[in-house]
Amino acid sequence: MAFNIDKQTAQELNLLGKFKSGSIFGLFNKVKTGGGEQLLSKMFQRPLEDMTAINERSALIQSFETSQLSFPFDVQQVALMQDYLDTGVGKNSLVTMGNS
Image (cartoon, rainbow, N blue to C red):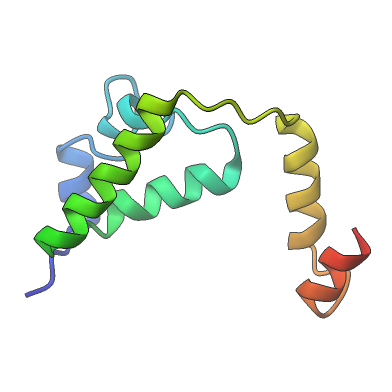
């Protein structure tokens, strides 16, 4: 059985919405990059069903919370790099990344 949620239900439950006050997404959104935001959004749009996978994800998230890691990078530079890679300047992403 797949757990799917339609757009109307997501809106009524206030699940998604980067800029909506009080949205569930907004409460959990502590990410720094666009890629992180996309990943979080996908997690909300396609929730896990398997208890083992849910527990593994929960443990992983908890380990990041408790370790209080700091990732010393400039968010704007990461966004610029992502934009560059997304434009498809090079036909092959690996070549483009290598040239970066």
